[in-house]
Length: 218
Length: 256
Image (cartoon, each protein chain N blue to C red):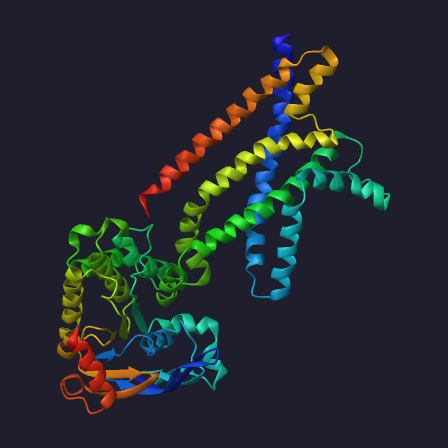
């Protein structure tokens, strides 16, 4: 029984990792674009994105999952997600990407603003271009400052993947829970905790490593 | 001909006038000191010269070339401003060294980037050698591989001076270079600037060190309330001021 459960949970872990990595892959760069939009000098653009960020951060991710997955079929009579698990996964990843990009955007924005103006000015008077100033001067200082809040957010993402069950994705928690109905046993549900802890443990080591790597300057 | 000619510069922050009709010129190889109390517009003037602020009015020319003319939109193009800035070097009050680079990297970064983008044909080795020579001149030969946070304030400011010199500016500007330093560290920075003056580096130094301005500068400008109250040879202005406001300012300084 233990091996059957372990195998199932590993499958659930597979779905979890799929959501986790796809979300990071798209939301990390998208967040930067939104961060620039939030800081845009063009007022309508910054307002629009402030409202979007307010809505996305102000409503539960679970609700956003439901709307994105069921919305098109219910309101437009057009179930763009199809009836297979790939469609569910696509809807899930899109909801996660939008949600996390907004959180990342706010962290990036804080990071950008926390780099003293003098750094940019020093680059300017040395004749650097805007992109040189961003990539060669500001970026690494910004990265150093955002590592702690980003590690929080990314660890939260690991556990938020369990919300995907609401659109019937067989992720880790749903897998563990399924044994209650099918076999009448509850221990697999608690056993899922081991998997979460292992992944978060690895991430914690990774973030500590990055922080150490960036500790050579202040 | 004067290396720098500034005519009728005006600058407002919102409704507050910060610079009112500022005109002066500077000869090549001379050092000009700008003195005056906080809020008199000294720093804003330097920032205008370095295109960190855009004057509302006036003309700035270097070696007879008009770099900025408030009435000529052609002189305000962003792409040209980057190159025009290189006529001026800037040493900030708060150093503004790049924390993630070593002293030597701070000095060479901009030159290396420029060699890459503008294809100046300069080799990385020669830029590096020049950077090392500059740091040696600043008395920092044993500090080249240190990061800014491992250096004292005085050492950081000397790296910042080397960094500005690396771009070979026509005119080197100092914005209160010793104001952020502990008193015992100001000496080493002033010594370096004095050395530059002896080698006839063209400089504009905003400073509160009156004795230093008197000894090192050829010309002194006293500013108050956004206008130039008095300008002339350093010893004349500081030892024998003609204007009541200058006398008042200097008297307050000598009391401290």
